[in-house]
Image (cartoon, rainbow, N blue to C red; front, side, top):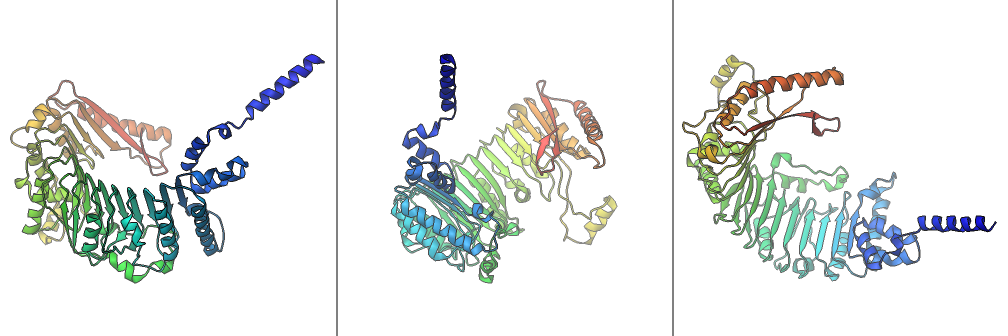
Length: 517
C-alpha cells in the first residue's frame, strides 16, 4: 500500500508540473514586453486570467487597435459597435501608465472629435511613434490638434486615410525621422513645404496619393533625408476600403482625385534611396543626387522639348546611382532622349519594365553603363500591344491610318561594338515572362554570345496548359514546353565558358500566387 501511495504522489506531482503556468512565472517586465507585441484587444483580455494579470496590460508601452476585429462580428447595428470601439479606446488611454507607440487602423469612419481627443491624449504621454489610419466622418478638411505639430518627442509619424490635412502655420517636430503619408490630401503645395521645413532631422519620407486639386508645385526639401518614396498614379486612384460609409464619399473630396499636371521639385542632397512613381508630374532636381544608391523611376511621358529636358536632367541628377529600376512608362522616356543619356559610372544593377516602345535605346544604355553586373527584363522581351492588333498586313494598314495608336517597335538592334560591361562585368541576365519567340531568342543569343564573364542566365516563363488536362497531362505539356525552349537555348553559342542556364516555369496556383514547377 505504501508503494501505491508513493506512486500516486509522484504521478500527481508530475501532472502538476505539466500543467504549470510557466508564462505567469516570468518577470513582470518580460510579460509586459510580450503583451506589447499583441493587439491591444488581446492584451486587455488577459486581465481575466488571474489577479496578478489584471493590471499587466496597463503597463505596456505599445498599443495597437484595429476595428476590423470588431467588424467581423455579425450585427445589424454597426453604429453601436463603432461607439463601443471608441469607448474601448477611451478607457484604455485613461488607464495606461506609460506609452511610446500607438497604432490605430480603422475601416469605419469616425467623428473628428473622437480622433482629435485620442491624439491629444497621446501627446500628453510624450509619444514617440504614432500610426493613424482613419477615415474621418463628415470632414474633408481635418484639423489635427496643433500640439501634434510641435511634439518634441515624436520620432515616427504615419497618417492616413483619405482626408484633407490642414497644416498649421507653425510646425516644429525636432525629433521626427520617419514620416509616412498615405492618401492624406493637401490643399496646396505651401502646406507640404511648411510641414517638411518643420522636420529638420527627417530621414525617411513616404507620400502616397497626397496631391489635392489645388496643388501645382510640390517642393520636397529636406537636408538630411536619405529615403524618399513618392507615388501618385491617377488611373489607380480608388477609395480602397470596402467599409467606407456612403456619407464619407462626398463630391468635394472625390474632386481632389482629379489632378491636373503639376511639378515636383526635389531638394534632398543626402538622398540614398529614391522611389518615384508619378504619371502626371514634371520632376526637377535642384541639386544632383551625388550620394544616390538605389532609384526606382516611373514618370510621365510628354512629347515636348520642356519635358524631354526635364527627363534628361533627372537622369543626369541620378547618374551616380548603383541600382536602377526603370518602370514601363520611364522606358519610353529614356527612348526619347537616348542620345543624351548620361554615363552611369557606378551602375551595377539594372531592372527594365515593358512599354510601348521597343529596344533600340537599350544598346545606348548598355554603352552608358560600363560597370553593369546584373540585368533583369521583368516583362521579358514582350512589348505591350493593342488587343485588336492582327497580322503584319493589318499593322501596315493601321500605321497608315494615323498616329492615334502607339507605334510598336519589337526589333532588337545590337550596338555596333560590344559594350564594355559585357566584356568585363556582366555576370547575371534574367528574363521574366519569357515567351520563346524569335525576338526573345535573338536577344538571349546576343547576351550569351557576347557576355564574356556571364555566370548565370535565368529564363522564367509561365506554364500555360489547357485547362482540360489532368495533372499528369499538364506535367507532360510543361515538360515538353521546357524541353523545346531549353533545346533552343543550349544550341546558342556562348562567350563565357562558365555560364549556367537556369530555366524556371511558373505555375499559377488557385489563390493567384505563382510558384515554380
